[in-house]
Amino acid sequence: MKQVWMILTAAVLSASAGDFRYEPDWDSIRSRYQVPEWFRDAKFGIFLHWGPYAVPAYMSEKYPPGIYSKGWTKGGMNAYSYHREHYGEPSEFGYKDFIPMFKAEKFDAAEWAKLFKQSGARYVVPVAEHHDGFAMYASKHTRWNVQDMGPKKDVMRMLSDAVRAEGMKFGVSSHFALNRSYYGTKDPSWDTNDPQYRDLYWEPVEKNSKPSQEFLDLWWNRTTDIIDSYEPDLLWFDYGLDKPGWEPVHKKILAYYYNKGLDWDKGVVFQDKNMKYHCFPEDLIVLDIERGRMSDIYKYPWQTDTSVGKISWGYIRDEQYKTPDYLLDELIDIVSKNGCLLLNIGPKADGTIPEEAKEILVAMGQWMATNGEAVFDTRPWKIYGEGPTKVSKGHHSEKHNKDAGAEDFRFTTKDGALYAIALGWPENGKFNVEAFAKKNPYESRKIKAVQFISGKNKLKWKQKSKGLELSVKGDKPCEAAYVFKITY
Image (tube, rainbow, N blue to C red; front, side, top):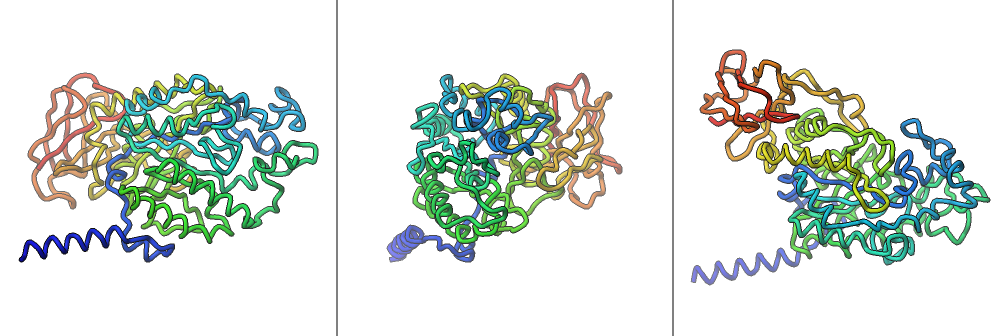
């Protein structure tokens, strides 16, 4: 009788779970949703800014509005003057005219996915549509899409299949909310003012005006088209949804996407920058910080999105690339604070990945192959770390950050082990971790063993009153950071 009751109870619970639907209400969403463990374990993903703006390969992915406004400059480059010098006035050659030149003729989705897998990434997030309004997927709601123009193939489908075949999660990002005001002032002679291109450039709008219902409906249709067609594990939104007038879609889109996750029987992740209006409760989404970090451990899973380049998100010829050392230190710092790193690269218009970006990803992958156990599947310790090098908090704060050194440690933990990761190498090979002194406020147990994960160098260690002293013989075995595994 007891066995029959248990079977019936399980059946009722299963049916109840299957019948549950999120309502567009914060309490309804809060009653069930949790950030899936796959994301908390993943730690490292690849972002992709790719579109027709890769054709001029100048200034940044903001080249499109730069054609129509003198104010858009980046890295000493000005798209307004450059465009007129190389392509002419936008009455003769506007942004739309780059689309036929964007052919992606050398695009190899499998090759991309293998590179991303080699780098150690566990999820990949291509831009589905940027502010420019060109859909990088086979859209049902705009003719300006990769299936019908430019590459004439659904690169999003090809990439999603390749990424999933490599065992990685696949996400998408939407930046379309700012399209309505992206191209700025519209001179009557420019193509942006031609009614036949309204469905790409939109129409003049008053500064700080709220989106019309027509635009809100278009945004909704395009966004749900992406969700329904590609079933993304992760959905990322850029600036825009935090602006006045977007309130009607907040609860609605969150419930829609999370219900799709139920339909697909998988955990999904919704990411937004939130900005000053905090349009989404931060316990119901994953907060994303653009080109910035947290200064301490954050109570919810979060993410930094930044790029391999210091100037642009999209491909440009004169990019200034960061070093693998810097990016690995950034990743480790973020992971120690309960976050993930979404690292962007900008492919070329022909579909190839710049050699500089490839070299960075390969170098990061080599470090991960040896030291990844201190990063993947870990959780923060009681404190994120120690050392003199601090980071600035918030969006666009990375420019203020300095390179870390051998006195800087970050801590992670997994399966009862504690990882102390040094972000630099002292010339004498001697480290000291103050947090693990004999009498410390974090752990009363004595250390049983310390292993040097990063190499086969001989290690001597001793727990003293001023810290855990670590002495590593020989040359440094790798670049960037050095992992010590501590057990009690």
